[in-house]
Image 1 (cartoon, helix red, strand yellow):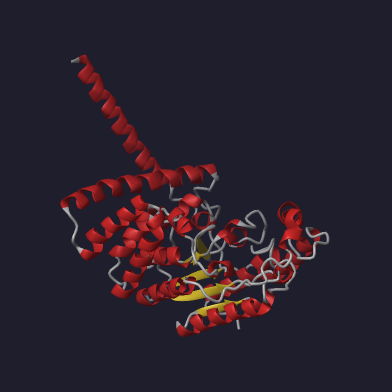
Image 2 (cartoon, helix red, strand yellow):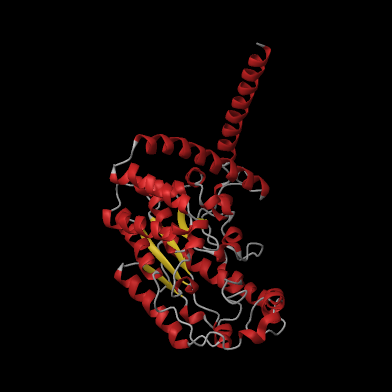
Length: 391
C-alpha cells in the first residue's frame, strides 16, 4: 500500500512539474518582439508557435540562410539597426536553409501575418547543380511547419503536391522522418489514414510541440533575449547615410591589405592558410542549372496562393574572391539573369545587387554579407517596408 501511494505521489509530482514547465515556457517565449524577430537562434526557426506568439502588425517574414548569423555583433546587422523601430524583420534561416524549406515555412505562417509581404535572401551558392543537399534539408526540416502547410486550405493542390514530392525525395536519407511525413500526408491530405496513424499522430505531435516549446525557452534564456521592450518603438527612419559612411571607415580599419576586401580576422583565420589551393579551383563553376530554381518558383507560387507580395534579395558574389578562384564571370552573369527572369515572371520585387561584386567591404569573407553590405541592404529593405522600393 505504501509503495502504491508513493508511486501515485511521484506521478502527481511529475505531472505537476510538467504542467508547471509548460506554462513557464509559454510565458517565456513571448518576449520583446524586435529582439525575438532579429534573434538567429537555431531553435527559433522550427518552432512555429514561438514565431506566432511574437508577430506584430509590422512583422515582415524574412527568409535566408547563414548571412543572418554573420555580423550580429556589428552595428550594421538588422538586429542593431532596427531594434527600436516599428519595422520588424522576422529572420528565419541559417546555414542549410534554402528555397524549399522556406516555401514550407511560408505556407505554414503566411495566413497568420498581418503584413502580407515576404523577403527572401537568395545566396548564389544555393544554385549549385545538385541544389539543396538531402542531409541539409533533413537537418532543417520542421514537422510543425510541414503539418501547418498541409492544413492550409488556401494552397493549390499543385503547390502542395510539389512540396510533398520534393520533401519525400530529399528525406530519403532519414527513413524515420520520411515515414512520419507519409503519415502526415495520409491524415491531412489524402485522407486514407489508419486508426494507428491517427493515434500515433496525436501522441507524437503533442510531444513535438512541447519539445519545441521547451527548446525555444532554453535557447532564449541562454542567448539572453530580453523579455520586455526597452521602450516604445519609433517611426523615425534610421540614419542610413551615416551608417554607410561608418561601414566604410570600419571596413578600412578591419582590412589591413588583403586583396579581397574581407575582414582581416576572417581572412587570416580561414582564407590565407589555404590560399594557394584556391587559385583557379572554380574555373568550371556554374550556377546555371539547378533544381533550386524550381524550389524558388515553388516559394513564389506559395506567395501567389496566399496573396503575399514577395521581395527577392539577389545577393552577389565577392568579385575579387571569385575572380581569384577562377569562377567565370559569364556564369555569374547567367545566374543573375535567371533570377531576374523568375522575378519578372512572378511580378516579384527584386533588389538586384549584381553591381556590388566589387564594392569594398560588401562581404566579410567570400560569401557572407559584411559591414557595408548590411548597411546598404537594410536601407533598401526599410524602403520596401514603407512601400517605396529602390529605383
